[in-house]
Image 1 (tube, rainbow over the protein chains, first blue to last red):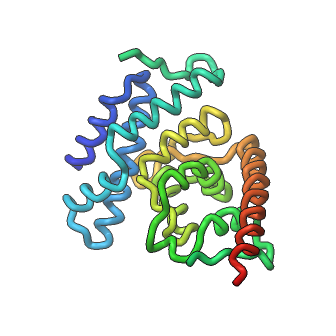
Image 2: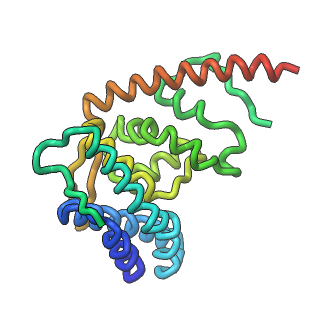
Image 3: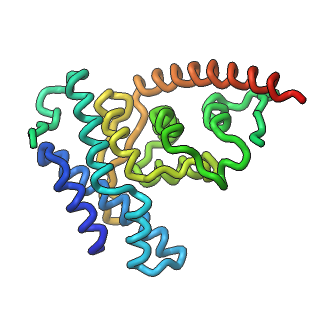
Amino acid sequence: MRMIDRYVRELAERLPVAGGLRERVREEVTGHLSDAASDLGRQGVPPAEAEQRAIAGFGSPGSIARGILEELGLIARTMAAPAGTRPALVTA
Amino acid sequence: MRRVNSYSTRPSRIYLALHSMMTQGMERRGVRPELLKGHLDLLLLAAVRRQPAHGYAIVSELRRMSQGAFNLPEGTIYPALYRLERASLLASEWSTDSGRRRRVYRLTAEGERVLGEYLDEWEWLAGGLNAVLEEAMVR
């Protein structure tokens, strides 16, 4: 889990969004990577390599964070989300 | 050479949309990521249409449904999932299974409607492309 935790921390650090959303991403991505690593483990891949491969298959933290920010940025400009649910984008 | 599909039979429209994105040999070669990215919304909406699913299951399901052709960097689905949810085409909630919470996505009524529009567009595009290619490739 150490590698997955480190990956998710790096991803979260690149997300200047409201804490609730950041926590959701953190938990969702941790679950995804853990599931992927578990599946690889069931196929006989050793734990450390399984984590490594799960992370490699996910994409770099920078590119995933950028993707999330781009999509939310677009939505914030063009769509009205219900009050209170829109993540607060903090300028870096 | 890629085989051009012709639809002598009419399987379900979802199957048609997914199947017609593939050509023989794609499974081995993979597919240009930018080509797939343009269709990611369609794929994600279609993947959860029959059964709500969490992100990892969606990736696995797309890989299975596409017979291995669609092997995306898995993380790239999340930005799109968040956007589709903001647009109310998907809805999501936490679900606990064997001690781990997972965010499960389902298609909304609006998502179903938009998916239908995507399919109309896709059939129009695929039909036109196939018609051109079939005539052009006749020996």
